Length: 211
Image 1: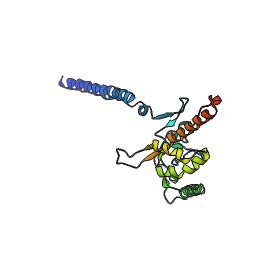
Image 2: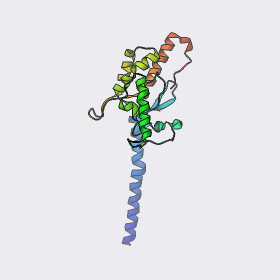
Image 3: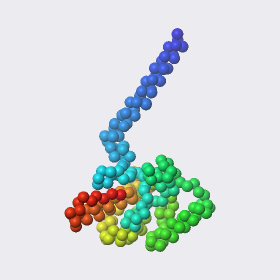
Image 4: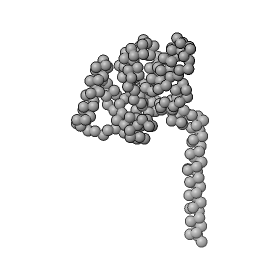
């Protein structure tokens, strides 16, 4: 009988622990997270003016147009949903420093930046180790400032407040370096352009900025 009671007690404790750790605890964390940190709990999703999701502030994106600030390269295209090839992964190419393919890509990237009068800083030519990096340094953003201001037809001094606005400081004030969230910055630039167009041509109010 003592063995049977021990087995029943073990089963009871297992069920209690399972309910606590697999049901009650996750439910509490989800509730607190959703109420206290609704944006972070839902993936830090960024929406356009139409309320459509255009990405996550935690995941970088590739921008090609001269009117956008370009983020850090990624060998897996940042796993951006249907755009990603392959999908749903993170990581780097794992190519050795001596690999000719890696050297060719870096050389081409650096030469392209020099042609655009942009200094080939490390975060503009080396791919993200995680494949998800959404930030680049303030210096890398400022290197692209002249190109973006020229492409958008606005003064560089008008963009500087937005760069400061979307610069995230060091973690806990001491770890890492400040970085600029490129997705948020580029979308705000589009929003500013939209507002300027509406001020000049209010009859076109039906147009909305998208990514």
